[in-house]
Length: 78
Image (cartoon, rainbow, N blue to C red; front, side, top):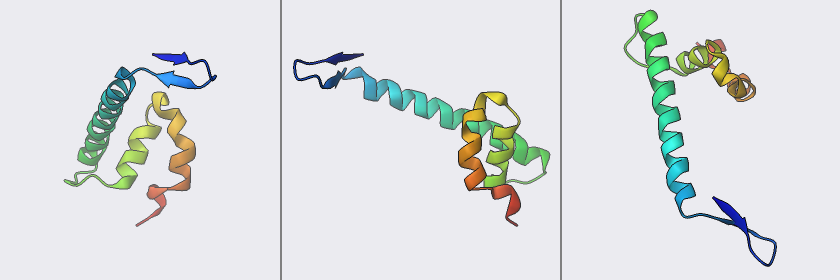
């Protein structure tokens, strides 16, 4: 998907933006589903930021988000 040209610069295949957009879309969809499940367990209808944080903390697959979510700690807001 990537190559180096004669100047030493990286060249990226034209498929990369499309594949990255699909990956981002799948990630957002998965997080939305998980946050919605958390919202339903708290018997609310609207997803809140703290629901996203709780959904991410519930699964180690999203451990890479913990530094970012710690900066924006929605669970402390009322």
